[in-house]
Length: 389
Image (cartoon, rainbow, N blue to C red; front, side, top):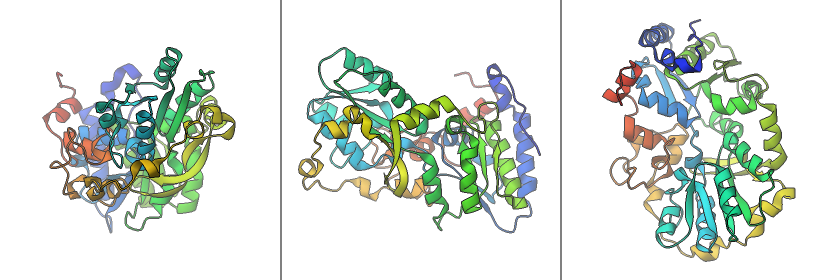
């Protein structure tokens, strides 16, 4: 089995070595040469998609190996009513703080960016600790619109446990990845034969969390890092598992991921949050897919502290182009951005229609910037270690 050499963090270019890239390419060609039918592999991570598109890795793959992006963009799967709640609160006069990727995500009537243009106090932050600091410096109500998977939810939990002031609250739209993998695995349209799991999420949860999934669905999982060699090495190992019919979990990111994960982070996460069923935008109703604050933290839960009257506020809001967007099918692996008639026309990063074009981790945004199956000159220069930018 071919593996990438584990290098020190300062040796990042080792993970982009063109010779090793070619070795992995040849290994994949050999493994896929006599397949009776094509293999479909899904990853559930926007950072994986960024690397795959940025470095043109799909152009290196055999034609009968399909690597598709699943619901790995937390901004993209934030449901429209959750955005509506944030916009509603902002228009009621609170200071609404959120990450930059959420700023232009369309709601039913408007985005947070549009609400800000109309006078709402919406502030872009880079950490939940910034929202906490804003609350400590004002007497006004401050609501942190919290998004992201279990990785960022840990930081939100730490802020809540730090003893925030009474004028601080959290509107949680955090999601939990393992349950949605169950949903996608059961979708007959995708026919996924293997999963690449996100290394950063597994750093928190540990790789053993995927063992129950493998047992239930008989689909192998390989935990992967984010450099080109990390991804290619993981693909080689996953294809080998599929060819041999082995249903197990392999950790291809051992420099960061352990079997049990980060126990301290898990303690923070589950002290503050519990799972709840809810809709992931464009995909499905996901049992236990959302993270909500436990009842003992209702004093910092924006949904408990404020009366959010969405039905009255929305009224008969007219439909937007969002209804024509294929973002849900793209995240489920059923379609690609090129299948959407809006892609690159009505829908661009400057004028996004769907959430997949807004976030830097959204498939449409990534494919618009880098292309989905080929790479531009910049990506090739970076892969060869000669980019001057």
